[in-house]
Length: 569
Ligand code: PEP
Ligand code: MG
Image 1 (cartoon, protein in one colour):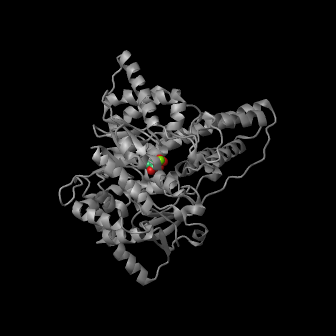
Image 2: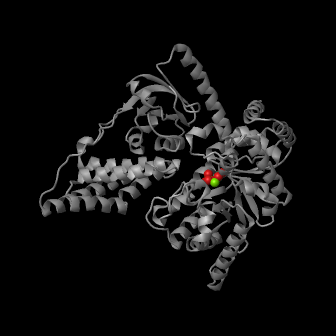
Image 3: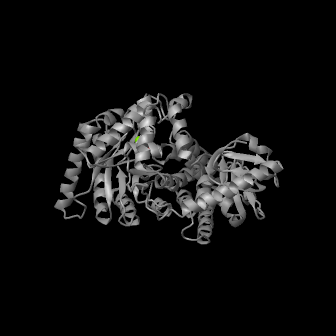
């Protein structure tokens, strides 16, 4: 069975199927005012009990456990003001009982999230659904799952597997996870990764055929599931498992080794993060700081803009957590595919070509100035740098820098501390910027190449459109030529320059990018050991030769095949 490989490794064990009891609408309409009041109280009581239950689970976990964060999100959602007031409104004005009101409000919130283009936020629909289910279970205890008894070597199988499901079993006995729905950023994936449990998600309807006690092989790297394997397959996967474990141990041992090529060239490996908490986890993989702190999440999933104080705390936390290591804070990259409902941005024909990121910030200076003030104030607490996204011309840099200077002057006038020498950089993710990298290099302290957008704009392929997905290929020689130009120009101007698009964490690209002259890679933290391993085993001379050969080839498939072959050697 094929699914999506969400957490690497091989697990061989027995299936335990997690059954979910589906809540149903009761259709009850409340009669008198006292019933309504009672029902509101019953709802509030259910929320309080649900919060207490999640807190009790958190208390049983060690502080550095990767799953406490998702549980804290649960508490926030259970206490979400919008959801609570929508439910109370339904009870009081429509006289629905608490059960039905919760079901309908949660269903509406989930639909809104499902319709978003952003994969991460779409997955967050599952958090909201889980919060709703927790309240429903308090309102109707018959919905509570029966206790799962798991033996040693259990593989949990379910529709989706929530943190609560995982935490309500003896996790030390769970060696694999498999789900019908979900993607790489689903909870099952996040928790499995944090705990190093192999997982395959999104297996689809075929998973319904798996029964309790079936023997399963979970290949989390390949995204494959084998049900009741033959003895030959068992033999094959047992060997594969051994090999994976010894490789993982060897890579784990590289955590504190600096990335240096065999001919002595130092390369910096950084992590892409969304908040301060991600930093801790990325240090465990050997990250040397963050080459991209995406600030969008701070602005999303809420009903008003975050205040300067709120933002200041957020950036200050990142600065402190980084312990003097650099963190590149990217200013708001919102709009287009990542809407903020409360900004009431107009609907657009071509959101990716429209009103987004720096374009909004230069237009809505109230938003931009608040963010810059907060970042600058936080820069007094660590090594923060500022990065502007979606730059397409010199004028945007000039305007953004002028606003930054005004903000600095205002802070100086009130003797507010900040790092006056804070470095300012831009994302190179629009083809015009990549082509005129020589001109832009004079304007800023650093570049970071955003291959995700650069690839979609260069190839005219919407990165969300399934129909043209096959054309989205960063190894297209046209995209590679642009990347090479940016790296050459950046190096010529003695920039510290990085890459923070997905390509930076793709091992197939590592040698090519090294050969082009890239010396700073920022990626999802879990990829760092793999990229580091390649760097430690190559010389720059060899990488340059690989780059020369690859750049003489005519197609993405030819280049990829060649790079895969040299990477395996
Ligand atoms: C990119 O475009 O490569 C990038 C890192 O930014 P995002 O994926 O957030 O648009
Ligand atoms: Mg981008």
